[in-house]
Length: 164
Length: 312
Picture 1: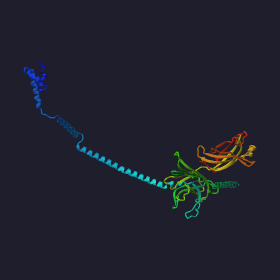
Picture 2: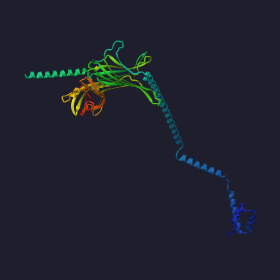
Picture 3: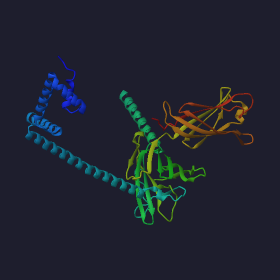
Picture 4: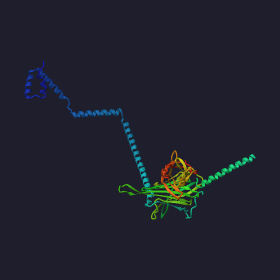
C-alpha cells in the first residue's frame, strides 16, 4: 500500500515546501500511518548523520595527499635507494662534474696561449716581411744590366774560381 | 813473326784509342760539357754598405740556363739567361729582361701597366760578374742589385748534374730562381724543290735564338735562272719546347733572292714562322714569290740537334 504524498515528506523535513504545503502535509500525516512512519524514518537518519564528527573538505584533501607522498617516498627510500648510498652517489657525481669543469677550464687557457703565440708569430712574420719586402726599392726606374770585374775583399781583382 | 804482328796490332789499336780520347777532350774544351756554377746573390746597397738578402747557387753542365723572377705587389720581373761556353773559354750570356709595373687605373678603372723588354748579349770571363738592377739606379736611397758570378768547377759534367742550392732566402719569397737545361745548338737543313724535284740545298749550324744564314746551293738539275738567282735564308731557332713523342722547335726566317748579275738582294719572304718537331719537316710554299713561271716552288726545312748536343 503506497501513498503519493510520501515523497514530499523529505522535502518538508529539508524545509523546501511552502508554509501552506507544510500545513497541509502535517494534517495529512496525522491521518496517514504510512506517511507518519516515513517521517519518523527520515528524522532518524538525519539525526544519525548529524551525530558524525564535522571536518572541512580541504583539510581532508591535504591530509590525504601528505599521507600518500609520505608513504610513497618512504617506500621508495626504503626499497630502492637507502639514504647513505644515495648521498654517496650524489657526492661522486658532484666530484666528477667539478673535475670535468676544471679540465675544460685548463684546456681553454692553453688554446688561447697557442692562439696568442700564433698571432704573435704572424705579426712578427708580417713585420719581417714588411722589412724585407723588395717593394721599398721600387722608385719607378728602368731595369739595367751590365758587367763588372770581380773584386776581392782587399780591393784587388779576384782570381777566377775553379778549374780552367 | 806472328808475335811481332800481334804486338804491332795491339799497339796501333792503343794509339787509335788514345787519339780518340784527345779528340773528345778537345771537343769538351771547346764549349762541351764542363761543370759550371752560377752564384746568384741579391744585395741591398746603400751609403751604409752592402747587405746580402738572398743567395742561390746553380750548378750544371755548360749550357745551363736560368731565370730570375721577382714579384712584388706592383712590380714583376722575369730575367732569362741563356748561357753558353765559347771556344775561347768565355761565357756568353743572352739576357732577356721583361718587366711590368702597375702604373695606375684608366678612366674606366681598369689597371694600366708599364712594360719593358730588353735583350742583351754579354760575353764575360770568369773574373767578371753580371749585375742586374731590377729597379734601376737610385743614388739617393737603397739600390737592389742581383749579382751573377760564374765559375768552372770541373772539366767533366753530364746532364744529370744540374742542381740548385738554396742558401739564404728572402722571408717574403719575392725572388726565386729556376734553372733548366735545353739544347742550344742545332743543324738546319734547307732544300728548294721545283715541281717536287730538289734543285738547291744548304745547311747551317744554329745557336738557339741567334740567326744563321743558309745559302741554298743549286745542284746540277737546277734551272739557269735558279742558279743565277739563288735563295738565301736567315733562320733563327726561336724556342725549344720539351714535348712527347718529340720535342718541338719554333723557327722564324726570312728569305731573299740573291741576284748575282747586279749583286742585289730582293726580299721574297719578309717574316715567316713555323713550328716543327725535332728531325721533322717544315714546308713553306713559295708560290709566285720566287718565279712566276707556272712551276711549283717549295722550301723544306729539317732541324736536328747538333752533334755535341743530346736530348733526354
